[in-house]
Image 1 (cartoon, rainbow, N blue to C red):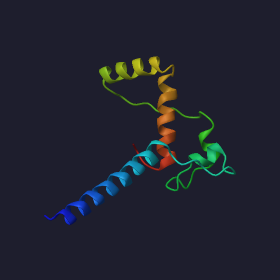
Image 2: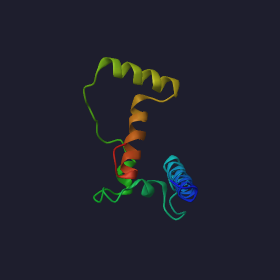
Image 3: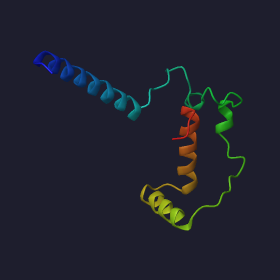
Length: 104
């Protein structure tokens, strides 16, 4: 490979790195909804077409599931360090999933 081709390859690689770094930054900080969109409306995903913003406000049902004791223990410890209840942490995670329309 000649010096010209090598310079072009390096230039292309640097451009690709810049592009990937920009994409990583955009994933770290989700875009803010327009000012006229309320917080609850911003939680809606196009994939959740039957939901209304009020659907996320009230605790009107329960969600029961079984899990491994070690996982529960580790998660409880993490919640304790973050000063959150397990329910609040799970609701926060579920809200983010609905907001972005995908399971992370």
